[in-house]
Image 1 (tube, rainbow, N blue to C red):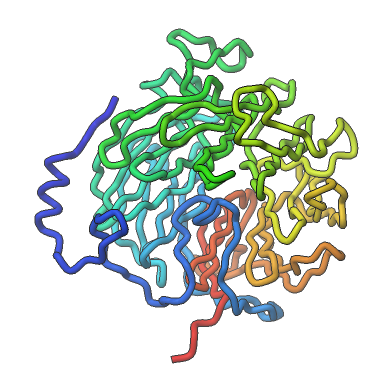
Image 2 (cartoon, one colour):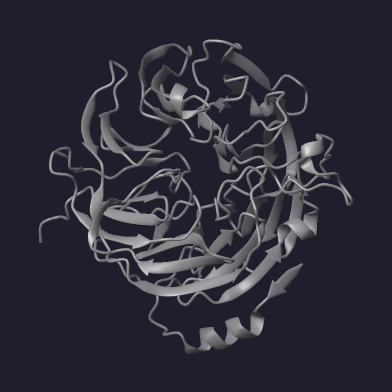
Length: 464
């Protein structure tokens, strides 16, 4: 059910100052609170392009004495990465029976506002009940999606709720094994959400007999929450949709529960699909598709591994749009990413491959052939962020590593086990499970571990 806060919005807008910047679409932006103007905002999961790559330069490579710790905050439950825009950082967490979205100043961690709602979500497999999805920032608004599928649109300046929807109730979504972990995408006036609903009275997902109802993806009006279209007959996965320019047109790609859906993001029309899913009931499609040129990489860790596809957008619907360039077999797989999205750089894809920590390896894999250039074990599962010829590697056990982005060999440049004084004693700030993707915005690296968020100065500020 859609709930709008129109009167609240109108009253609040009347009190806002008029000297605001204006976005390309004519919307008034909130005041800019940045203390550093160099670098970029990081408004969404895995960054502006959803590829975990940053164009910033000038990083500190001497980590012998660590990185300057700017601030850190205690959080509640959850695995959601933060997002940053116009000097504000947003984090999504859970305290007891309340899901809470919080805005702080990115420069010092000081709270600006918080907005929360009750939640009783319980994970089927005993993982914590906090949010999994990064906040999504779009001009004057920020969106959040809770573990139980509750979607909210907030005003950035003060956190006022502009509209909200219980997506699971509206579309008959059966609770997934590990909760909602897919972050939405903004495309023009649309908010595209991976939903994956089922017909009324659908059986529990553990039955293996849940059928989709044509709502793999649902597009909402980003300002009002009204449905614009639904597309794709598939259930929910944990991957997030991507929309990009491809073959001279705008196309959407979503790695749903059964495989890849290619769709027209404006018309809301499915164009093609490619099945790629393990036979195991509890299998996870969680890594986003990686798209380079006219090729698409899919990967999962439960059976099938990876496949590199060539996709011909001009052949939609005739059954010949996909051509497999290489694919993993059941053994000795090149890439078997669990929930971390691989990162492409100069003909090589870098990835943490392996379902569980003991067998997880950080790898550099040739994009064109699937050949493994190098593989580094014993790092546990990791997430990667490319910047300035290096990768920041965030291990699930809390380690931060800096390695060179080279296919020649594993070359570690730095290693930090972040510690600080909390309540009178020195503790590890980033503890297992550190499953949130690292974020870099305006020279500051933000890393989340269990119940804590830390901000470190990866790039020194420019000289006055």
